[in-house]
Image 1 (cartoon, one colour):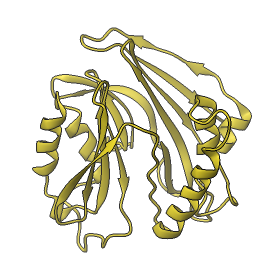
Image 2: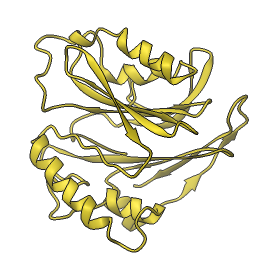
Image 3: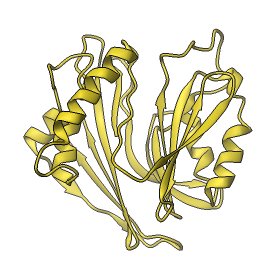
Image 4: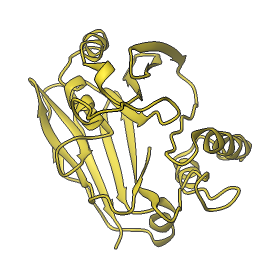
Length: 240
C-alpha cells in the first residue's frame, strides 16, 4: 500500500505494536495515533483509502478516519469488525473505502462509506488494485489501472520484486496520476507491505517515495515478538 499525502503534513511514525482492546496489533501511525493500514494478532487486516470522488462532509467530522482501523483491529473476527464499522457515525465522517481480510478468509471484504452509510462488496482472492486521489480520482484511477494492466504482462508478475516496481511506477509519467505520486503539493510518502502465511506475519515499511527507496536500497531491522495467537515480525526500512 502506498500512502500519498500533502508535503506539509507531519511525518508518520513507523510500524509499532499497539494494544487494541484485548488484542495486539501492528501498524504505522500518524503522530496523533490514527493509521491507514494494520493487522492484529489474529491475522485480521484492514486498510483504508479516502474516497474523494464523493461529496465530503461539510462540517467538522466527528473524528479522523485514521481512528477507524484501530477500532476494527480490536475485533476478533470479521463479523464483529463489520458490526463495529456500521456502528460508527458514518454520516458525520468523510467518505472512505476500507478493505478487510485475514489468513484463510478466501476473499476480501470492501466497505464503501459515502458519507451516509456503508455498503459491503466481496471480492475474490485474486490480484486487484484500488486507488484514491485528492487531485482527480477519475483520471488517476484510469491511468493507474492502465499501468497495472501493462505491468501484469511482465514475466515476474505477482512476485515481491514486481510489487515493489509497480508501487514505484511513474507510468506513463511521474505526476498526479502515476502510482508513485509526484505533485507540487503532494507526494507518495511511504509504502507498507504485509506478508501473511500460517507461520506468521511480517510488515515491511519504507519511509519516503517508493521510487527513491527502491533505487537507493536501505538498511533494515527485524525486531521479533512472541504472540499468543500469531507470530509477528516488523521489518522497518528507512531512507535518508
